[in-house]
Image (cartoon, rainbow, N blue to C red; front, top):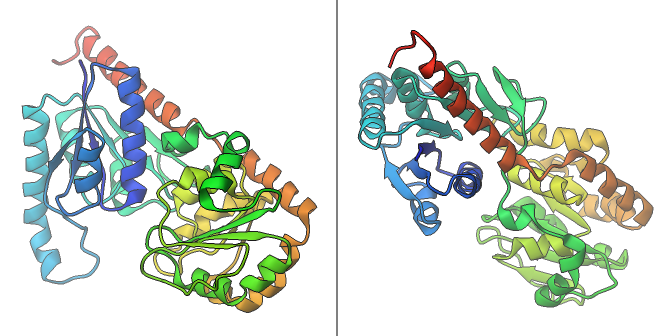
Length: 369
């Protein structure tokens, strides 16, 4: 029985690929033990136990980004956290470490390297985070989602998708999806979503010009999130939800999406062949615009700056797109060409390769312990 430690957390962008990979690894190796390293404050504190995995926690330890008191305390806290992870590795007889970025990953990478354990890293964004840049210096088993990600030893394997997305047959499920979501058959559907928290710019722009979308012959499924609410105009063909707990059905109903460009969103839309208008989040290091670049360059998506997405844009470029079904169909075909559904399998292949090669090296004549 192999014991794996998977490190990552804080946000859904780290936790969901981790859980998808853990599920696939457990399918391949039913006797394996999978532990998840996270913090007590992150999203993993709820999602990991819900999925049936044991969560072991360490202190949240962000890298200092400016010279201040936290930077002065960082070296001591770093050593203590790495030692905590080393203790977990010893006590739980961990044989391989897999990291998905985030605060807890860097100490796990350091501890795995010091212990001589196989280390596999997965980077979801086109622009890698600091933890994974650090970790990639300590292993050659590095997976990325996007081919253009600049990370040492990186191999573009795709994103481990949620099972319900990976296996979704959109066209078979579409009648059920339309019925359950209160949408009409025979009318194309535009889905608008800014993620679980919502996106004020998207919500306001669409809400102020929803009449133009309806006039183009489309219906709208508008998932607003809970932090950027808008009023429901009560128009026929417009369906407003604060939250959707069946995104597989929402995506099965969709013919075009307007969304942010997080790695999971881009990967899921591409895997399902749903063309998109990406409005990258304006705050951060610009990774969302880079995440969208491959789909845009392939002709499967458009990209609009956050500052430019408003009612005028909806009434202009968007309405013209909606009134051109041949162009939407061409974008769908091009989007599908950029997508893949086998990210979980390919990452588990890499994990098992790392473990096998470590075992072969240990068994070689003259090898240490």
